[in-house]
Length: 136
View 1 (cartoon, rainbow, N blue to C red):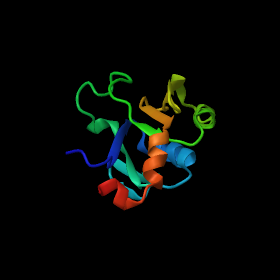
View 2 (tube, helix red, strand yellow):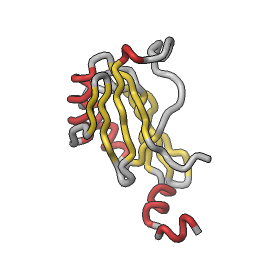
View 3 (cartoon, rainbow, N blue to C red):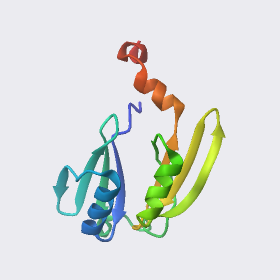
View 4 (cartoon, one colour):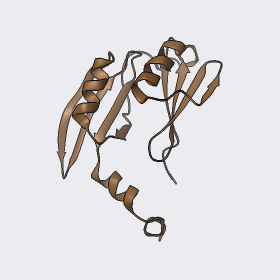
């Protein structure tokens, strides 16, 4: 059924400012632009992070940070948190050892979105496994 993460979308009231902020954080420019939407390809599997102009948000979607948190693997949770705070994000979830090597944290970006990140040993195992082991 669910085969893999394709696109995570956030909302921002100022798309140009969101583009600048995420470009600074990610170290890359968005690869796709259309009126009201930008998209970055990031990570080992080139997953997509889309930013949508807030005027297209469904009713109630912008009432505050809430809902699901998507966690992106990072190699250094503390370093990632420090960088995000330096760029103006606010801590949402403190770094938390979840056991077995999993460490999670999250911030609220300057546009009100929750950005989750974690050190995930399982992610690294999947990344290192030959494709035949994953499908076989």
